[in-house]
Amino acid sequence: MTMPRVLPIRDWADAEPSLTYAIGDIHGCFGQLRALLDLIEEHRGGRPRRLVFLGDYIDRGPDTAAVVACLRRLQSHEPDDVVCLAGNHEDMLLQARHDRESFWHWIQNGGRAVLESYDVNHIDALPDEDVAWLASLPTLHQDRQRYFVHAGLRPGKPIEPEDRMARLWIRDRFLRGDYDFGKHVVHGHTPQASGVPEVRRYRTNLDTACVYGRALTAGVFTDEQGPAVAFLAVGHSNVDAAAADRT
Image 1: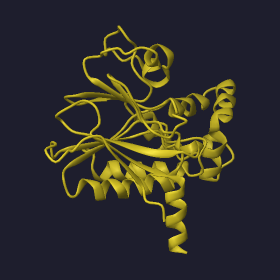
Image 2: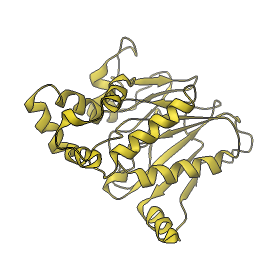
Image 3: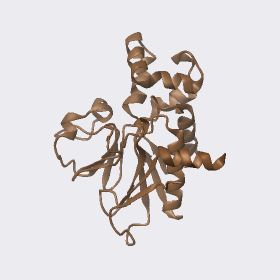
Image 4: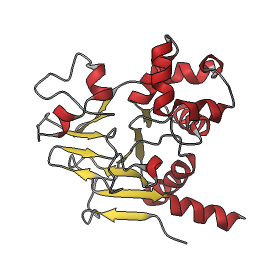
């Protein structure tokens, strides 16, 4: 069985015992999510932790319904320690409920997999509770060292008031330059074909293209520095091997 990858960045024996795990784009990959949560539990070794999910829980992958149920359950059990942010795919689903053009745009970007996951034929048949939860998700979380956001932030603009379009959709202006926002920015949204996180001076991208056959990644963060102290990653081979072990 291929073991999940743990990618150390530094010897963190002296790290702050309170840990934050930020998880990149899931896109309906429930098997990888479940395996990564197990790996996080093993890794934290009983220390306090917070989970921050960076959005894009839905579309493209096979198990959106299971992913949403899992995240809602986690958040209901630990509302102070589980943060779920909105992504642009959640935004597309919400817009798709209002007009036909938006609906087909959503379908073309993986929305049909959501309908299949819930075993429904129309977007209006999706569970009201799940849709309401998706609509309630914030676009930003911050702690002492970091901003957590789905896509990124607009360089040169204040963090507040909310720039929802940038937080959910921005790419080029945010990605192409190293801009200091005053805190390290942890984001997803732009899949890394390499399957490993993109680590820059002022930002870290945790979208490691799980739905495209790469990995689902969690960055491990402490209060002592902005960038990650380690990464945990689960690929498709890990999940396939675990499933084979259970048969």
